[in-house]
Image 1 (tube, rainbow, N blue to C red):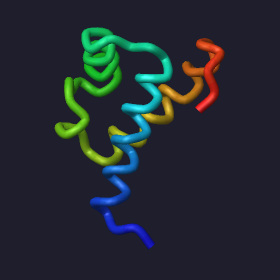
Image 2: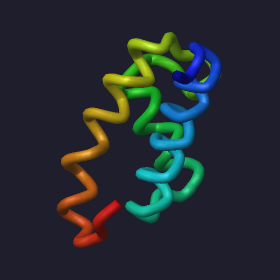
Image 3: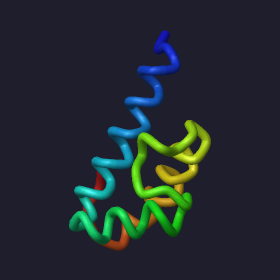
Image 4: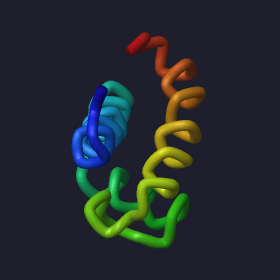
Length: 68
């Protein structure tokens, strides 16, 4: 069973992987974070915000033709 820190790290990793798969540059990535959560860094987000961000990014990756 994963502890809270491991789950948080996994969420951050998923967000980063999704952004990379979609080809976001740094500015685009930060803009997406800001528009989705009001924060410009995953470290500033709550676990709930991270989870919602990952859920929001997941369907968008389908438009890139890249499967994660």
